[in-house]
Length: 97
Image (tube, rainbow, N blue to C red):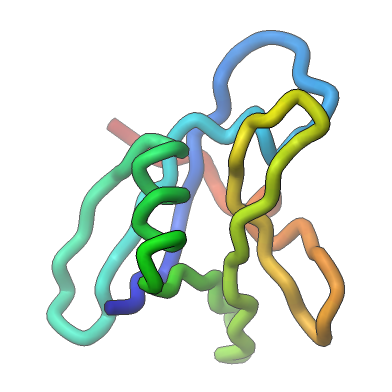
């Protein structure tokens, strides 16, 4: 299964890694229009199970997420484009409600 991440929420406080600060991902399954919002670790575990999460820009370009681990051991998602880590998730709007 694949979902497009369309918004994020960040936890408050200081974080040495801005990707680690994301607390929730808002998503939509574009094949059936199911949508939801998942906590960071829940989405990380889902991707680790072989599912795919991605970000799509206005031109239709897709950057898929991979699981990363911070120096403190916190797992988080980060997009990759052309084999390089990118900040696509950080540029998404805040999820409402």
